[in-house]
Image 1 (tube, rainbow, N blue to C red):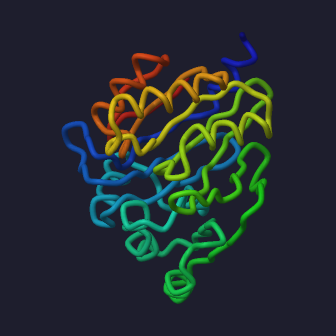
Image 2 (image 1 turned 135 degrees about the vertical axis):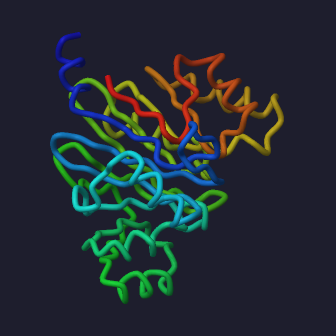
Length: 240
């Protein structure tokens, strides 16, 4: 128990962008998470609005020079909308994308001095951070994993290829119980469809879930009935 607490103390997640927001923060359809560790700081996705992304990062007092790596889950506008505003801040950012990511978009990023790093297999980008292979069903997407000796933390953009498939993939790779945060894309589904998907997810050892973005209000409620977790929004942080 003390080992897990010690490991957790090194991880803090800022909900930078979400459909919901605390007073004083901007909200919009999209997702962005700032993940801070002793080892590396990473921005995961950039929301739908560059202006609002920058506003919320400033509101958190996040130093734009404190990170250089940006992981983009997939190429939809609500996860890429802040990229060019971020580049305008002048940082030499690395953008980790899947192999299906638009080559035209990649060219525009590199024209603005960003570096695009493509991949499709498991990628270890630091001691504890990994990027999953790009899953293809419904829409190509990758996820980010922070892995330790005792747990894996899975960060998800929209889970278009199904949240349970990302969970199974991560558990098979690391054989650790999971913490999960991000969009589950449950908002267009019926309650029965969501329940079925959550029962599939129950087959994986889950420690805690933080449903965001396209999980939807009904989806968030159903997730938190079945799993321990919290209903968060832009402006919230997680640190254990």
